Structure formats: structure tokens, C-alpha cells
Image (cartoon, rainbow, N blue to C red; front, side, top):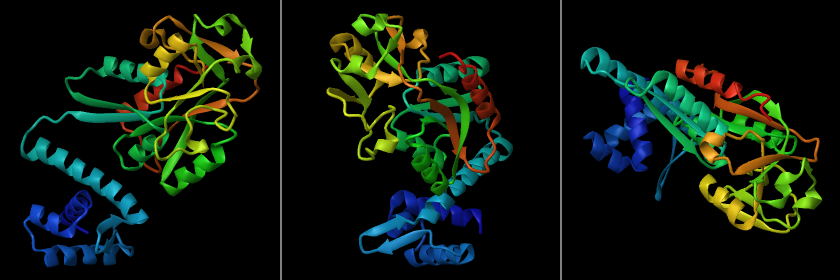
Length: 301
């Protein structure tokens, strides 16, 4: 296996065509195909499935390319720093469900290190994309939750994707709503109290499984429900139509403002807040410190 073969494989996956990849690499198509067959023979599994409609990745091929991209990126950084004498910023990326505390921890990380020597990226997105971003090393860390309902299915998905879940803390379940909502004055809210108010749920797109829902009790028959794509829209709906959502109860007023409240839901159910990363791949220094910042929110519910 050579770095050249890794670069060939990544280029083919990007173009989804052997011919287009060969053109980009200034190679003949037979030469490129032969190099890939040699690599697949050495690995003992196919990276690509070839058909008249083009090229797709196998499951093992996707995993292999995740590592290949990382190795090529590391090689590029070494080459720029030690051969081309360029100063390269260290990169750190995190993907998350819509958690303000995870954004707050990200901001604390930036505050500690600054942006002169580092390049940061944050993706507040759908559950499936959080998992995909970590699997493909677009993000080093993903932040999401498990509970009794989704834990078995999610852990199975993690195992299949070569990902591990690490518990940060457990917390109760809260109703997140505007302070103008009549329920905001209650000490505890029962499910029956919620019947006259719209429930807000984050849209999960084509991967709309109950197990991937960002809100707990995703199978509950809500009388009124509104789907939304982003946190800002949800906050507006909470104030505009007295809507609510279910959450961890960890509120960051610096980001959401002081017009919202979290009231304990009358249930014994818990949420397990944690982070996912590639299995057997150690966290970077920035990753370790970001996890430290996340752990500071333990017990805030």
C-alpha cells in the first residue's frame, strides 16, 4: 500500500467515476484501474462496487477511506511544515445535536486557544449527520444523547460504523419553553399539561427514524407538533405560539437569551449525554480539552 494508491482511491471516491478520476490524476483509465485492483487484492476486500451507472463505495471501503483521508491530510501537513516550510493551522471540528451547552463549550475552547494558530469548525445538525461526520472524520467529536428507548439501536449503529459512545453525564428531562408560556410558572409539568400546546421537533430529513429523533419520547402521540430545522426558529415559535420542546434542562442564557425557561417534566426517565468518536482513535489535545469543557455542565440540571 502506498500514499499514491491512497490518493488514487480518495480521488475516485470524490469523482464517483474512474474516468473522471483518471483525468484529474493525469493517468490512463486502465492504469488507474490496475492500481486499485492491486490495492484491493492487498487489502483483501473491495473498496468500490463498479457498474454501468458508476462507482459506489462498499461499507469496508467507506471505513478505509476515512483513514486514508486522515493519513493524506497528516502527510500534507508534514510536507507543508517541514518541506515547504509553511505554517499550518491545527484543525478541530465538532458535530452536535442542537445543544447550546455544546456550543458554549466550543466557544470556551476557542477562548482558551484563540484562532491565530487553530482553525475551528462546528456543525449543529441532524443526528444521522453527526454520526456520519464522525465516521468520515469530518468532525473529531460528535455530541448527542442516548436513553432507554434508543440506546440499543444507536449502539448497534455505532458498532457498525466503527464509532464508540462515551458518557459525559446523565440528566433529567425538562420542558423548554418561553417564560411567557403559562406552564413556565409550574414547578413540574405533567404530560397532561402539555396537551394544549404545540410540541417542537427538529426535522431529521430522509433519515427520519424514531431512534434518531433529537427529542425523547419520539413515539408519543402529540396532539400538536411542529417540525423545524434550526434552534433560532424554535425559539421564535416558543414565543410566538407558546410551543415547547423536551431537552436536558441545561440552558445557556448567553446564547439563548433570558426569555426562556426549563421546567422539570414529571417522569423518572433520564438522558445520557455523551460524545462519539472513531473507535480506537485517541482524541487530539483540542479534543480532550473540549471534552473537559463539556463535563463542566454535569449537574447543571
